[in-house]
Length: 254
Image (tube, rainbow, N blue to C red):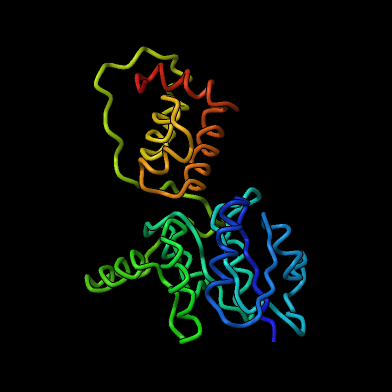
């Protein structure tokens, strides 16, 4: 019998990567359906506005859900699928508590980091067959540490009115050796919205490194670098490497 899998991921490279992971994780015949946003995911599942979800005779058995999508947050979809008979696994870049615990509260059966090695992700997904929750090693350690210290699922920034997307908290970027060039206050306001990891990507980008070179220097996947660049362009309201480099120059990063 063919196992139906739904992968909800807006980055086509990451989506292709996850398809490979799924195919290598199970010996059963796999039928993968891909969705790049919440609307198409809901359409594939059969979710209609204002109507109760009634799974069809051949529902999806496994769902991989990204948290950040062009038309909303993956947790919105997860919250609608509490009665859906599938194993629902979050696949994301975020390993912080403010993403992890709301996902588990919304019904996630697993939580995987897309930055993990291919072999690690395959191994974690295979745990589903053995009845174990698929958790990236870093996430499993975080959960153990949390509950060993008496932690509970506390209030989060998602609140009662809906879901928001908090910023990740990566390692701080190295400070430039020379003082920054004065910049326009409006530019500075936009620039300060970047996370430290995005600042680091922007630094390398402005120095002419390719996406694959940046990925190697930072020790992350190249499609992750691509996601950071997309976020940088959006936050700085630019559409090219050259425009981003101008702002980086004003801040003294290059």
